Length: 325
View 1 (cartoon, one colour):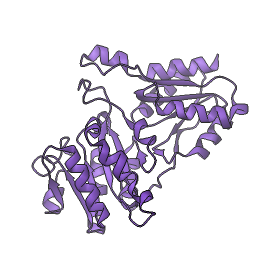
View 2: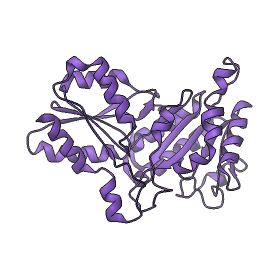
View 3: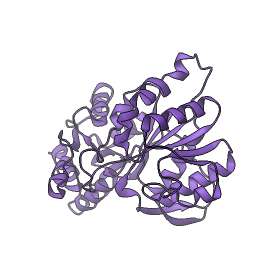
View 4: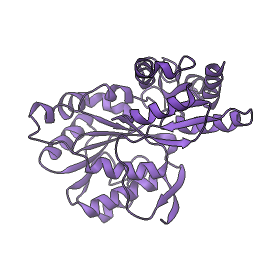
């Protein structure tokens, strides 16, 4: 297998190009994606290669989601760009009440093969309306699949799989990882939804994480390794369906757990994971589970305050030390 280094943005664009070449029903819809190649330049080159299949819309998220949903119901495979994950809140009826429910309510007679791509996360001083991590809302909603990778290899493989899926997939990508580079195969590959990946083998503490917090965990692991502590880092990649078997294997190996994400800690996905470990793997635990997440406040514009609100490598390092004491 031949590898090259791509950024997450390049991996995403390559995945889209391959899927649009493979399947004429795949198209992209959103704001400013023809004129500007997307707000982060993530679609540059695609409007010229696929004229008429990259479609600009008015500034109306309910319109964009509704158009994507209608197209999916008629046999197309839309890739819907939401600019910022925060803007999903203005189209919640289309996502949570319509797209998520239609296949079930029609007894499986229709499918909704739609990807909703939503850049999320804080750390860019984009303030309260452009910095949230909302994945827990959508994991909570039956009928939706939720993906949140960090590395280019995972981004490409999961986008291709999400496009081919028959259900609506919320695809979150943290805005600070767009330029993150990593090895990506030249050859065709897919990553199944619902498969986690051990990014670092360890014996002392399992850190269950995803998205940018994976990078924080890797940094914390390097520092703790100098003190003789080996973290095992489990990258969920897909938040629903969740790879419970991978979680159980790692917990049974280390017997100590930290669950870490950037989203608000209150009601976050970490609470669900910790509760299920307590219910099903209690006898494997040698210490209480520790959760890491953002403070429950709107994201500040001020860089020092924003840094104070969201977790970083130090948060995971301190949590790991807590479960070891």
